[in-house]
Image 1 (cartoon, rainbow, N blue to C red):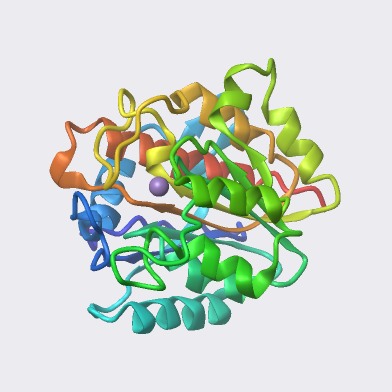
Image 2 (spheres, helix red, strand yellow):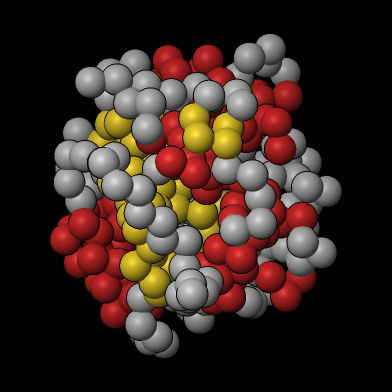
Length: 285
Ligand SMILES: [Mn+2]
């Protein structure tokens, strides 16, 4: 018997690789809602893909993965973020990786605040999410990074894949000297993942936040706010493989909206989940 759709698998004699939980929250979505159904859709896809990584030589079939289930339902953004923050604070340790399945991007506002100060944040997103306010909300999926950087600063934040933001947002991140690898740089650079490596030279610990809309809608159509001109599947994987050796303290995969999916998006999200857990097992100590 299995407690579907949880991913939990225990293998005796091996340490815990990752703890997973879902955040079925999408109340501030402004275009295509439904990311609250993301966590279980990604789990279902995960259970139907191969989890041996030939690129990394890691067999996740042999890994210990603990799936805690989904955070309880709330319609309050503040309560959701606070619940995520508290749960991550309880789970964070020096051995395993925390994997969060969204849900909308605002959950990162809660999770990253519980990361130790030595942890860098790498945000993959088509959007900058740097508005001061959007649709009458100060904190939402479209403003979360602005609110978060007000609290944690810009020194340990890198943004990858931006191609959609207001003129104000572009000038704001320019003035703040935020570390950016926007799409136009990625498209004109031979190995853009080397720029990420350089940004992270002084960080051994990282937290990765993947808004699925960073990937081109041709590969990942089911997202809340699709934006053409994005990363390919191979493009995002190369960025992730560039993190091999770091201590992956945590990551989230957000903004996937199963109602708009033909199956491609959840399968790609599941692939990213598998490769990130595999990368987490290759930490250099
Ligand atoms: Mn986005």
